[in-house]
Amino acid sequence: MAGFFSTATLEQVRAASDIVDVIGAYLPLKRAGANFVALCPFHKEKTPSFNVHPHRQIFHCFGCHKGGDVFTFVREYENIDFPEAVRRLAERAKIPLEFEQNAGEQQARSVKEKLLQIHEQIAQRWQSALDNEESGQIARDYLVKRGVPAEARKLFRLGYAPEAWDDTVNWAKSKGHDPLLVEKAGLILSKNGGEHYYDRFRGRLMFPICDEQGRVIGFSGRVLSGDEKSAKYVNSPETPIFTKSKVFFGLDKSKRALLDAGCAVVCEGQLDLIASFMAGVQNVVAPQGTALTPDHIRILQRYVGEVVLCFDSDEAGQNAAMRSLDNLLASDMVKGAEASALPEVKSLQHLLASGLAVRVAIVPAPHDPDSFIKAFGGDAFRKLIDGAEGFFDYYLNRLCTTNDVSTDKGRLVVLRAMAEAVHKTGNGVVIDRYARKTALRLGVAPESVPAEFRKMSRAGMSAPGVDELDGAEPGEGPAMGKLSAPERWLLRIMLTNDDLVSWVAERLDCKWLEDPTVRRVVEARLSAFRTNSWTGIPGFLDALSDEGACKLVTEAVADPGKAADPARTLKGDPAFTDNRGILEQLRDEFIDRQIAVLKRRISDPRTAEAEQFELVRQQQELRQQKRQPLGPVAGV
Image 1 (cartoon, helix red, strand yellow):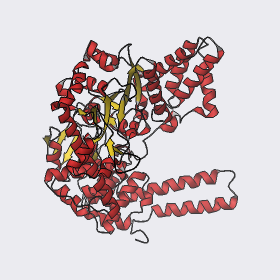
Image 2 (spheres, helix red, strand yellow):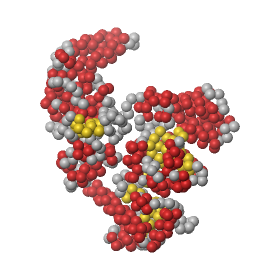
Image 3 (cartoon, one colour):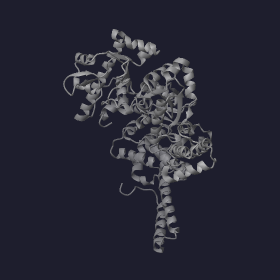
């Protein structure tokens, strides 16, 4: 990847990372002929549809259509970015990495690496203070009082920042760290911008905040003394390695549980998360003292299809729920939330693939999740989560509780708020269902509210309708089974028969290809041929930035079909193509589409007579072209 690694380095790492060995370390693979199969780790299934191809060094799942090379698998399975996947595989193969970076990029990376090193070291220092130093007794006593077991302290790397103004300052000096860099890390502050520094975290229980790879990037410190003037929690400021709106506490521990459950429990505090995790409900995350942001939601979408917001029953907890829900709706990321639970819309599941279903669990007073688990146990908490009501039910109840629905004003507020919320789903079934539920709660005629909802939609409140959302998401790409037979066979031949590419390059006009993803893949393959840059499927996948195109490539290669002779299929085989080769079929179908357009223009009464004669002439020319033998395309 340009800007990170040289091409030679990528090829060296790829060559040293046999895809069967790498994936076999994650999944139990079974041999199936020349290939290997397993249950797909990216979606739930009972029959293996996940295929690994040693010869071409790729994988492809015929269930969810994920596919790629060894870098793709590690990136997708671990939910990390491409550079991190390369680093992990290079480390596994004991290959030193070479970077392609300009001076500015090298300096920025150097600063980030130093900040990560400082954070790791101070985390160890505070862990030691909690576990071994006399000053840490106050924190140890607090954890015992809160019922936090020793294994949780170790797993989450809890620590204690001593009650001193210069403990971290002196520690940094002893390690030889530049005070300006330690200040940039957010661990110390300068007095009036001078050269004298003091500690940001003093006398606090320290919760390390980690990125998705488990590296410490920040801290949250809880006050332990009874000083009412001190903030209960102090968090790291934003730094080059920490942005609180993009980080979940605990995600590095819970990401596999999230993927397995397909559902994320979102709670408010670190101790709530730790209590839940240790009680066995491990698909849990906590935002860093903020409501769910669009960045948080994008992170969750990589792991789950459903979110359960778990908050306290007091007013602060309810308000926190509403702030998160406002972001979920305002970002238009909930497409069909709650609808996935409705049996009558199971046929519309493909519309909801990129949305998050949202439910809300309210912990009964006077408890928060931590105290509820301590009082009633993990199973009771799991039942609370499992029984969480859908967002729109919660929202309707909340609106009716906070507004006087016995008055016209209160009913109008509820009506407008519900209409605005449900229309953001773009799902007609959900809109109709909650229009009727709203009518029932407001005590009005059942048919009146749907009419009002539709009226508000026409006023510009609604999101795209179901018809507009049908089909694949941008970049998703088609499955092979949805392509026309000629395009399907051409794609397979171009990717699995290098000897035939030159013949195709002379004769194929890419505008004949109807599917845009197929066209992008074929154009890229022809470009690789003409520039002599073809190195095989794994390298080809690296060059494709389109995820949908990558999926199509791996499926075509993983299932190359059963043509006995690709050359005869391509150039014409009576047993397969009625003596028309694949390229002739593509050309003729393209011409047929052009003729159909001309027919519509000729039959249009607004077309002038002279123009009609010209269109008829063009039709005749196109029909003549279909009778011509296929030869090299002009200009090739």
